[in-house]
Image (cartoon, rainbow, N blue to C red):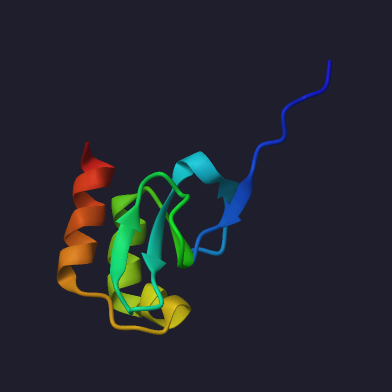
Length: 87
């Protein structure tokens, strides 16, 4: 029987290649809206971040998501990511 392929993605902060399910996707649309995409399927430019509070803090300090998406990420987005990681 054929093994199912596990989709791998790279974390924008750590550079680690991880299974897609271990990451959160942050999306920027053409209208410059930024939101967290838990399904991983919404349209727009996406950047992945590992579901880890230490990595989230590192992302805030280094502004890695800002650079990847080319837009300033608000504190609300970081707060939403933190809430998703904690649950």
